[in-house]
Image (cartoon, rainbow, N blue to C red; front, side, top):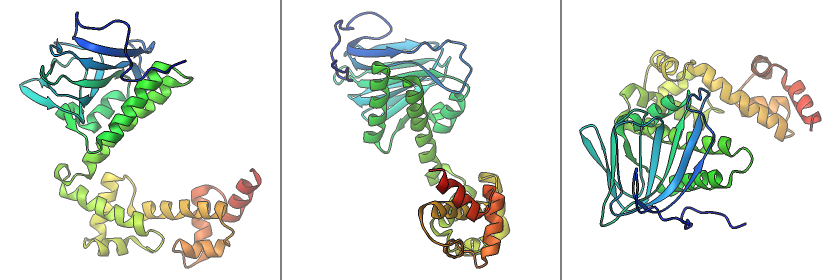
Length: 299
């Protein structure tokens, strides 16, 4: 059976009718009920090649909506602002948001869109900054385009678990946007920038670091201030964050190397193997030796 792709022709050309005029399109639908109240679910999605007179002007809409512009250009008007759409633009809005999409008649858009709802939808939309900005020019358009194409193809093919797979990809898109803005200094207070600087240093050097004070000194801040930053942004103290990284690496070494427990303790920065074993047991629920034996024998 020949697969449908985002540019596959359809039998009927959508050149007339509402809500918008398109010259080519393909859509998929799920049986998501309007009162769905679990984590996240897609209602429908599709690919559209807009006609020159493409025009959607709604005063209301019941779902969360995102659209990725592949080609061409156009505008999205929300409130008093008019946003330009171009290749690489990701646009969207929340339920009940008046909006007006128009294509550039000289260079009509092509786009992939998804509508969705669920208890996690609002939080994800807020984190992505689409709730605030409505249009974002993504930093890696090829990757975002690839993920949208994957959602479209899976939605059309409907393999087993297709709704779940599509939702995971949708969640990834929104969280990628959230992560990108979190890394951008222009959108972070100085305290969060300092926190990320400290955490990145720990992430890259945790096997060598003995105490949080070393991190604070490297980042030229007071250790008590660093502790307050971790409690605010990470919700655990830096000592606990550091220890978790060490002990997770230790678990990986136990299962994937023949190194002794003493050697592993030294590799992740413990001078005392007994202290390492005590911390490992508290975190993983069993001693390093028992952890290795149980998991190795279960293969």
